[in-house]
Length: 181
Image (cartoon, rainbow, N blue to C red; front, side, top):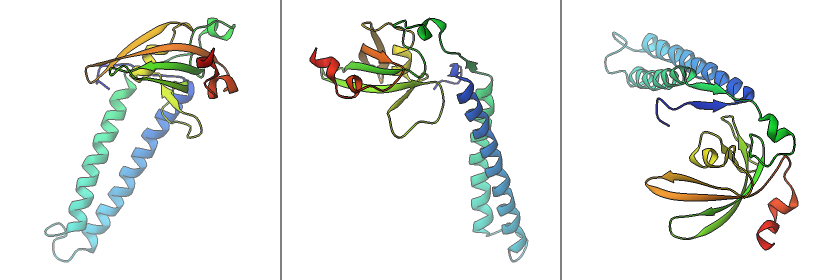
């Protein structure tokens, strides 16, 4: 993701983002304690030829980079709500919808996929989730059933035909029944 791109999250995703920042801060604190311990327990001046101390310093720089990136990301977050029109039975794809698509790949191959469109960072391992911030998520969000979206990855064009959407995962979506019609 580019450093200027907006990060679209729902309220739950925003809370997860803030929690990740707190977890990174805790990792930094833990690493600092480990670095201090390595320094105090070393023979001599504490920092020359002290592999444990040097490793803790490298880890500290890595963690600080993660924290800096997350903190900068806070300025790019846009909190979105579910679309009112989508809530009233409209065919627009919205966050938390289960979406059935036909993916048309550059090599003329096709693949049927079912996923849940999410506006959060963590994913559910039971069902494939696609983030609104991903190229595929952006290609389907706000589109109507029957429309085709397009996105690019590594210079290759992918087309996504939206077959159906549902608020719940249904057998029709899971079993590819929509493709047989």
